[in-house]
Length: 269
Image (cartoon, rainbow, N blue to C red; front, side):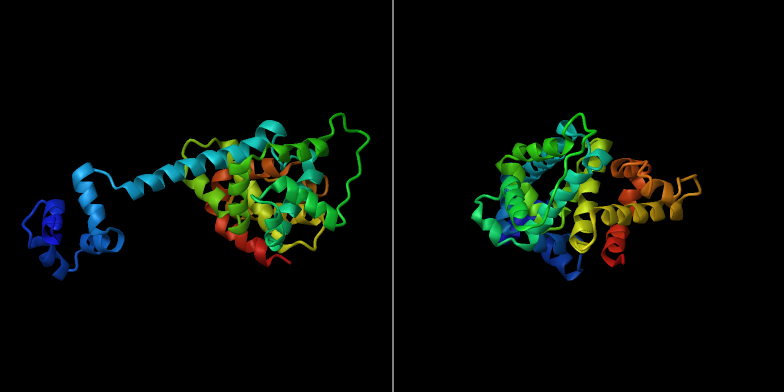
């Protein structure tokens, strides 16, 4: 087909319509010229599909599947990583992720990327220490470490893309996947926020990092609601509420204020 014939078929009009609309600066013309080739349009006329966009759709579905798998590894094996009982594992996990991002060249030792092996590398090169808690009936920290073995190649690949892009791929999935449950969304936002906290405040202790995130979330709630919210002291000093439950208090607001929360984490002193 000639270019005129292609445009005439798309608009179902005379061949000169394209040039007329182009002179009139119609948005439909700008859209077609910016995002479609003549081959794309001819393919659509013949098959009612454009293969490259069908491929993108398949890739997006794959990413949604892997993102959901990543989140559910935590939820199904240990519950939320934000639960207070996982404080030590949380500290190790996000320290490993930040270490992996800051030392990406060293991660090439492991091909493909493996968070479990990166954790071993981090522990061997840092002063990370863990002391067993005598009162624990279930060894929570060990359960968390064992969880890293659940990361197969696709999940590790997705996690690496999250590490390199500040967890934007995970949040993009959350915003698009309407089937995602609330607890899964909470876990996704929690992972993203914690990654930023650990990235921008590596010099702080794990307690200080938790306090930082809690204070910012509480400030968001207090600035948008007149409802009773437990005082900062009762939540942070007595640790009566876990991080995942803190986000659950108003997930819609967390999603709405997400960009501002990230900015607050970055400038927090």
